[in-house]
Every structure is written in structure tokens, then in C-alpha cells.
Image (cartoon, rainbow, N blue to C red; front, side, top):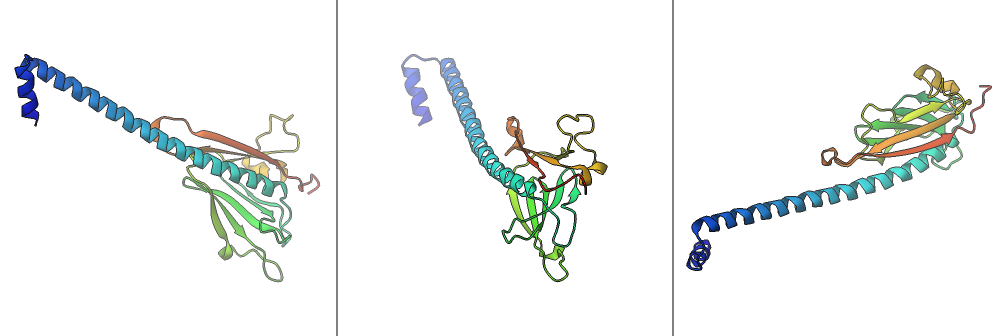
Length: 209
């Protein structure tokens, strides 16, 4: 087929050089168009994935702030906040709707933000770590080593010197928590991650603890 086309062009007065140049230019145009289409399609797919991940993460953040606002003493008498790390937080709050405080753990596992829940049981009441139920709240989290949780005392926002709180001052002094997660579907496309933020006042924590 290609030979017939070349023969026809030669009969129409085109030189072999002109045919080679035309063929080369056509190939360049085709490759360029295909590359553009392929990159655009990939960016579209990644963009859709990023939007979906962001929407899922936003819903999770709203749910997390509701849980944080209602943090309270554990059923075993434990203080409302048990752990206050950069990427892991443990509080007691009712997430199962049975009017009893569950042990709730939020933590980053790779690129997934997860929640672990332990319900109180027994007499006396205990929280058995073997009964923890873990669910994924958000995927595509690209915080790396950056904190997810920021902790602030009762003087925030007036006190900008001591806030966010250092690790050793968080458990007893925290009165406000901020959550920041960065969502990115595919880092090699070049688009920056989506930065999502939410905050919650710890209503049941009092300064006389």
C-alpha cells in the first residue's frame, strides 16, 4: 500500500526528497498529537481521582471534627486524650452511638488516613486492643513527615508564642485541634497536592483537670 502511494506521488511530479520530508512531518505531527492526547487523558484521570479523594477526605474531616468536639473521659476513667502525636491521635468519644465513650485512634498508615475504634466492655470496664476495628477515612494522603494534627492551648489565637503546642505539652494543655492533610493522586503529573484543613474545639476539656 505504501509503495503504491509513493509511486503515485512520483507520477504526480513529487521528488523522493519531498515525499520523505512530507512523511517525516506527518509522523512528527501524529506523534505530537498522540503524546498530547495521552498526557491530557492521564491528567484528566488523575484529576478525577484527586477530586474524588479530596471529597472523601473532606467528608472524613467533618466527621472527625464532630468526634473531637465531644471528646470526654473514658468509661474506665481515662483522660479524654490519650495520645497527641503529629500523625496519630487517640481520644475517647462516642462514635458508635451507644452513649458510651469509645477509644478512637486516628493515624496515618502510608498514604491512608485511618480510624481505629475500640468499644468499652467488661466489669470493670476495659478497652481491649484486640477488638479494635480499623477503617480507611482518606486515601492519597501525601503529608509525608509533615504533621496531620496541630494542638493549641486555651490562649490561642492570642498566644502565638506557645502555639502550636510542643509534644510534651499537648495532652493536658490542648483545647483546640487542627487537622491538615494534603491529597494527591499521582505525584509525577506535576500538579500540587490539595491542602485540606479542619479544626475543632475540645468542648469537654476544662482547665481544672
